[in-house]
Image 1 (cartoon, rainbow over the protein chains, first blue to last red):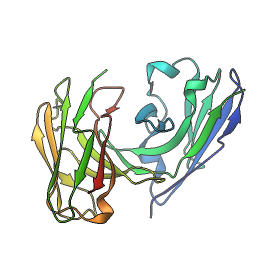
Image 2: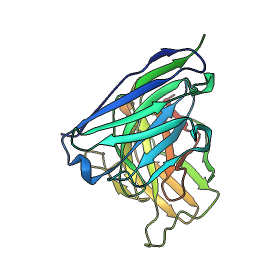
Image 3: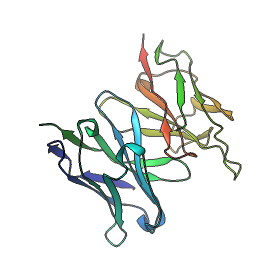
Length: 117
Length: 112
């Protein structure tokens, strides 16, 4: 069974940093693109970042470019999102999502990030 | 960015009756490989989204056959043949061809 378990969310002040992690199991992690999708409170869904199997291709939504970094450790079956210079508008639930042929077929339960003073 | 426009945004339905959600993209979703990367997701309150349909009309494993997807190019539709109580929640269309991948605003389905 495919499982994606996020961790690392929490409360952080504006300008601060946070690192999210996603532990993957139940599939060959190194064979799949992986991504992060977020959902602000009461709002819709936004694809934040995505990367290929080996890490040579990474793409970000414009609003996080230069502040967020997606990375992975295929030996540990883990995905990370380093978030720096956080803003109030980054407050959201962050989901780890397996990307597959123009879609996200498996989603984690999400981890909440709140940026507030 | 590709804009995905859903309608209606709110859909009250009667149990056992059909329901239909429309999704229109600002650009064609047909990729050079010939596939069309249009997906539908369902999100119940307090839960993460679950994919229902991929590549316009392919149902995911475990998705009831009362759900069907259709369309081409820039116009797509999700249909529920007979709405059941468990179908309430938000439905999102999503394109996976142009980065950043984008979602529609969501359609809230509720029981009358």
